[in-house]
Length: 154
Image 1 (cartoon, rainbow, N blue to C red):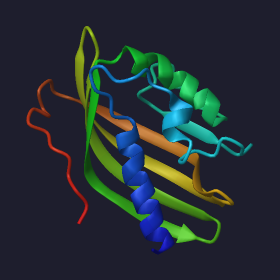
Image 2 (tube, rainbow, N blue to C red):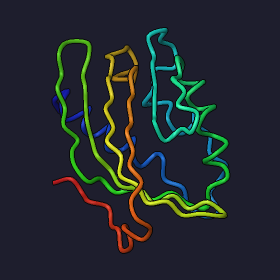
Image 3 (cartoon, rainbow, N blue to C red):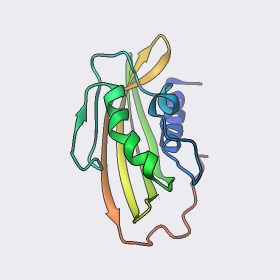
Image 4 (tube, one colour):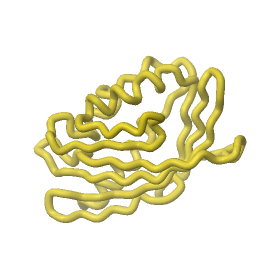
């Protein structure tokens, strides 16, 4: 499998790591994403504008701390890949972009959204790991994703 295919597979699987279903075990970022993020690199910069505080995490552990409280409160999070992944690889670094749609259900609200995600991957002895992340989300009209189904890669 080429590096491009490996990164495409990783990015696609990363999206579905964020899935939550009613009755799931409490969300544990490290357990869920250990194979994706570089938990040891001093070069990590991770950002998602869905974070109300607009924080930039400089470690994977800090990024997990941003998301664990919200994901533990969720009733469900459902995702479908809308476009991509698109991958470029050059030596020890690779970049991938992917767009997905998601329906987030909290106890008091439901949000439909579309997110474009850009990841930079670094080749490590453990394999490719995320060292940069930028997600940009747009809230969709309520009900926009009724009937949503995950797109499978061909």
